[in-house]
Image 1 (cartoon, rainbow, N blue to C red):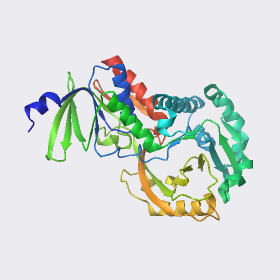
Image 2 (spheres, one colour):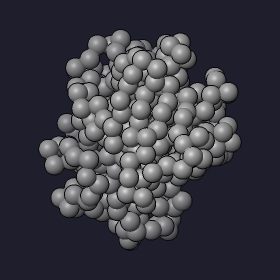
Image 3 (cartoon, rainbow, N blue to C red):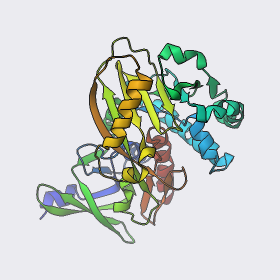
Image 4 (cartoon, helix red, strand yellow):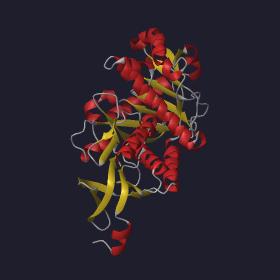
Length: 379
């Protein structure tokens, strides 16, 4: 039961975007910048983005050495370099759009801890550097064993250290706040608590059914173009897309006096990651311990993985250090059989950008720009 005013002024849009995460907000900004006279609406089913955009570790990363070498076992050199370049382009776009200060970007470097089983990666750094130099213009990876004692690491995962010269860290909350503020400034409408139940496309547009949690009814919205930017939750609207959810476990300590860590760190092919933020240690990962259990869209803690994070934090990252854990949480990423986002027209008036492969911070801005280009050409 809509009023006349609601039907006249709040039911018709040029563009409706489902999902207010990094990709959805970036796409809204791109569309308003390219087509400033067109109305853009972003719909978010939660009060905040549900998956990973506000729950990630804040890594401005393009892939660790062992992760890229692992990717090369299943993908061609051209594919790996192309994805690396897309991550770099996305970070350049993000930083250029919002500015480093507004997103808390810090170029403190990135390091990967190497265990005995990965030690051979040190012999392949020259190969990786040559492969990536057309993108980076410099050596992306350099040995940094001399810094192991400086950072205070212990345990079997710290036999060697590799520095990634192309990465940094940012403040996830500041980034999402800045994207939201920019979208609002440009005239984008954002509605939260608005779950899209389904849509129907016809020759002239798309009907979008949105659940109103207060009135307990479905509101019919209409747009010329619908874009789905829901990453791990995409199959609720596009059930045939090849998208597999992957949950990530995270914890953060209270401030640690005398903390030696600076920058961001990876180990075990990128499955584990940690960083310093505001004098605390943020540590996440371990999905490879329970791939089946973490292939879910349920946002919940995995006790086995959280215990593993506790063990590695105590014995490897902060040995001989007194600390307390302040918070624990989980986020949902999206993966596929290939490490490549899906960015394309789904049909004549429906579009999608999703499956960021755990690299949404790096890939999101570039994916949104590419999708905006596809939409602009077809309207």
